[in-house]
Amino acid sequence: MTVTVYSKPACVQCNATYRALDQRGVSYEVIDLSEDMKASALVQSLGYRQVPVVVAGSDHWGGFRPDKIAALS
Image (cartoon, rainbow, N blue to C red; front, side, top):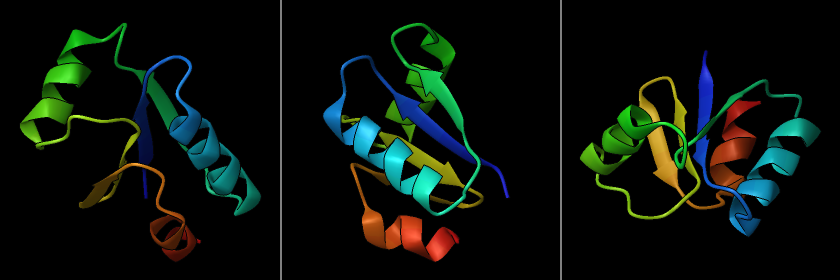
């Protein structure tokens, strides 16, 4: 399963998400929304207004969600 984390610089919840994914051994790709306008439009189309936004297969969520991250491993 592909896991993508959409983030922005200096995002505390993004850093917490990276740490939790790393601790569980989940590989992921980071996309900086401040540099990728297409990705920003995708995140907005999903209804999110905050970061991080994590997309894991057909599931997605916003913010730091340790419960969702635990379910990935």
